[in-house]
Image 1 (cartoon, rainbow, N blue to C red):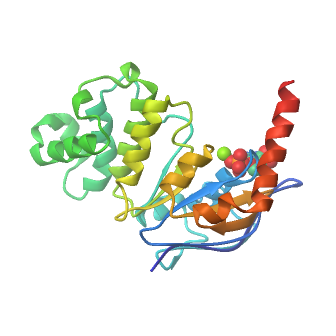
Image 2 (cartoon, rainbow, N blue to C red):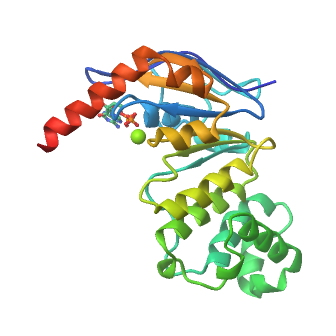
Length: 258
Ligand code: ADP
Ligand code: MG
């Protein structure tokens, strides 16, 4: 079964073609890495899938449903989850309070938020267990009562993932989840992401190619908005066009910094 299908999807900003006639099919249970130089159109592709940016042409299907013209909320309801490069957490609240607020959306048929706030959510035992379960899953069970502002950078990322998991996604889009993490934190996050499959289909934008290759079953390379190659990590590593693009983009960076 197909989790995500993009058909001939394009998006321009003024004169810049950010995404150029992209065809992409990701199967349920797959983990796919999306790599490519800065400005290749990776984040825009995610924004098109979530509906945060509207496309110029093409179609987008999630689990067989055409969501091309559906709003963001409808796509999230179709079990699409996404993390961002910039934190979206309540910094004055604790880990469990953040997870509780995120989970409420999932429970809202059972529990009214007003009643919850009025009676103090701590009285909701099964909901509390749900929150603790998610905290465990992202390695934060020891930090439940810690305020977000007192968490390390790596723990912020773990909590963001937890908040996304609270919505029970079937497909998860991760935009550079390792950005700014230490080597140890990267190792932990890699394990964490790998533990999500196969129940959750994962699409990950990752700058560090070795991380991308270790997580993904399949890799797609975006360059100037177009997918120029996809295949197994080995195939991509040996692809000459891909090697050239990476060498060139590294060289232009070196010149800029010189
Ligand atoms: P990547 O994530 O691969 O680094 P992006 O998708 O962020 O690339 O950007 C692709 C291109 O689209 C870039 O040239 C970027 O400047 C442009 N772009 C992205 N978002 C916008 C926007 N909201 N308005 C104008 N240009 C944008
Ligand atoms: Mg980006």
